[in-house]
Amino acid sequence: MAALVKENSSVFSFDKNPVDARRVPPRLVGLRTQFLSLHHFNPEDARQILRNAVDAGQPIAVFEAQKRDLRHLIQFSMSPIAVLLMTPLIRPLRMSQLVFTYLVPVIPLVTLWDGLVSVLRTYTAEELDSIIKSIPNGDSYTWEIGESSSGPVTIFYMLGCPK
Image (cartoon, rainbow, N blue to C red; front, top):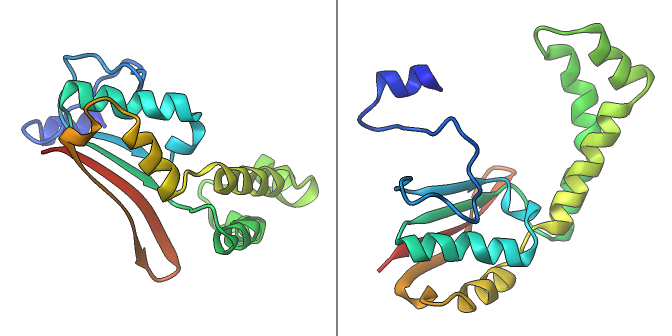
């Protein structure tokens, strides 16, 4: 990351310190992003993340690789098969990866659990809309909730920008 910022310092910056997404320091300005992570926050924390962006007047973009629906439950239930097929292609390949993929299939099972729980915890468009409506001054933002597909991959997104 440091090399990317050094080569493109007029475009990119980052903070090396942990940042609480519910209470972003005022010195950090610009587009706030949440990649594949909002579903890890309970509704009150998700509301606080969005409210903090609104209070600071900063745009926010949230992206999830899944939706809470049957299609994604089925798709993510196939993740252990992908792990079994893709593991030999990983470089460098370590003996521990082979053991915990094929002999004691911990990695495929953890991948299955993580994927299914993520699908079940992902907010629906209706839930996000309800959270947005509960944010003081949330109507001072233009909000867009939707999805974009490319082949079998669908990205669910929410964008918020000051009007």
